[in-house]
View (cartoon, rainbow, N blue to C red):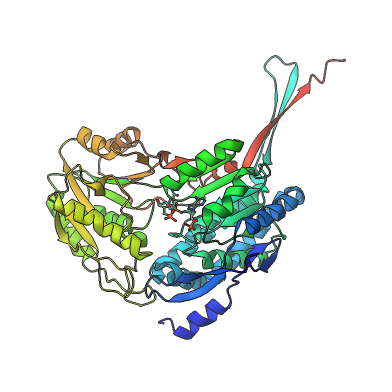
Length: 494
Ligand code: NAP
């Protein structure tokens, strides 16, 4: 059933537009608001309260005040809040999907996929909450006992990007709740509405006041800067660009603040001559076009064996050319708009640079008709090694293809980047697949698979793609610290 304008208006009217501080939605101290736009139309959807430094500090006050009592809430109870949140998000999947499509642009079917992925973090960490085990052991000399316990790190600042407005929030909030931490969430200014709806759901699920505070803001640095300097803050978890991540790491060093950094990517997608070509093309479609290419995990460089490069490009172009660009609420939409004019222009700049250096646009190569910020699905062949598109994040539906002749060559090309988030390898030779895993400098590898995201897996990168892991058994550890208690020999006075 197509979405009606009334459905959109009704959903928007249910969204809280204030700041969530100490369990209450309230205006910013300055009384100002900022607009949230639909990138498919450029129209304003809502305006939300615009937090400044004073609001940020009030949110940290609330988180710090709630920390002690929240940490004492039994793990089972914290897990049950997350389980209820999982059920509520799942029951309201259509609302979350529509809201994300409206403020971020992705097609509804993809937005539904993100809701399921995001909800999975709530379910996963509802199960992990009761498994934050320590250990008890006898010291090697037999003279003392070692008690190791896990404790919540304390109040956290969580900063999220616009490209996955729900999943990037639940991937941080769920483990923080499970671990017993309180938090301040600063969502991206382009997509705060999904975070607001999610915070409403967390309240409904029974999260006590002050545990989750939300400060949407159009001045991220000024609003969160004082929090990062405040000794009451014990953790910064950031997902966003490497450039901002570097700056935040430097700020965090002043108080030796514990950090997790999920930063940019430049994923190589390597196709060997023995790969099942149809499955490689299907994987390429997912790895490239999911989220219009606006994903840190998006395949950024297609590195294809020279013997099959032409056939791969032809089959890839055939599939890509069937992808319709339209507002994500339209039933035919397969590719929504890019997030804003600046992002669309940057994509075109990278394409133009590659073409002026000798690449050929086998498909697309230009912005698509507006009014939104659409870009044509594009395939570039004959891309030269010095083209900017091979070293910068594209964040658009553009696939540059380069060729290789030997495995060593493929490894050299794939590792030739400052990033190391994810790589994809397609081959029928399992030994080669495992070898590639050993040789590639990457936090994650998709072996004959175009998708790696999974709540049960440790997500994260190496090199300048970040520090720490989200999801999996590792995800909760980011919000726990280890305390060791040395106990004297219990037999000493016998
Ligand atoms: P961004 O510009 O770095 O922004 C990310 C978040 O940081 C936003 O909430 C932003 O607020 C905030 N921010 C910006 N400057 C700040 C400052 N000085 N102090 C504190 N916060 C600040 O990134 P983006 O454009 O939103 O997202 C795209 C990037 O995220 C890409 O590089 C992508 O690869 C990366 N990403 C990585 C992962 C991963 O898991 N590795 C996942 C998704 C995305 P405003 O919205 O107000 O600017």
